[in-house]
Image 1 (cartoon, helix red, strand yellow):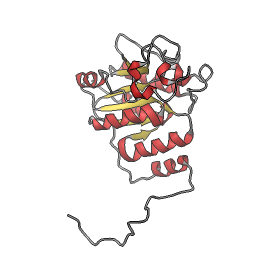
Image 2 (cartoon, one colour):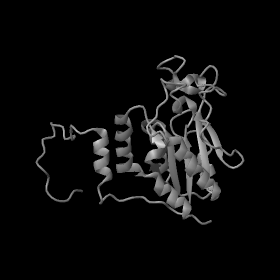
Image 3 (cartoon, one colour):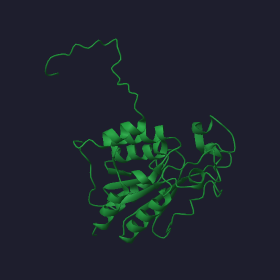
Image 4 (cartoon, helix red, strand yellow):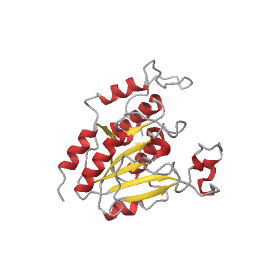
Length: 238
């Protein structure tokens, strides 16, 4: 059932908007819109750090697969994780690795087969290891090895969050266009308020990075300065 009059639109012609603006410019325009509603922080948050492992964070070691967007990304991730942990809030770390024969990579591991290929990140390797600049307390932090983009896929993440009665996820890591985006979409799909702190995510190219931040902001998440995450953690009382 429709309301109002039909518009005179030629359905044989595209209506997709085109623009000469960069992805960064479009993101900043959308971000600056004062009318955009927010999901906001709920009653209890968890930090979900998606793949801050050397394969993706150390271009000095792995230049073909790593990337730096904000040079202080690891510092920011470590700071909010430490702050959340100190308040008794859950902190989760994921990283990617595969069997020696890469059978658990499935079809995702079939497009290339070089030493830098995804399915050749092996358990216990330097590429699998977390960045040395982050602090992980395995006595309380949840640490999962995942095989697909989303931190939810075939990991215990959902049951862990349910046990902790979390309603808000702060998602960090990389890449913005890959595993961060996939995790954010699944986060919203599972009913969580979803927060992406800008300084805490990264990608190989600014076009991928900002185009996906724009899409996340419009549809799935609040994309905010990391200072807002610090404020939310500071204001939390059990």
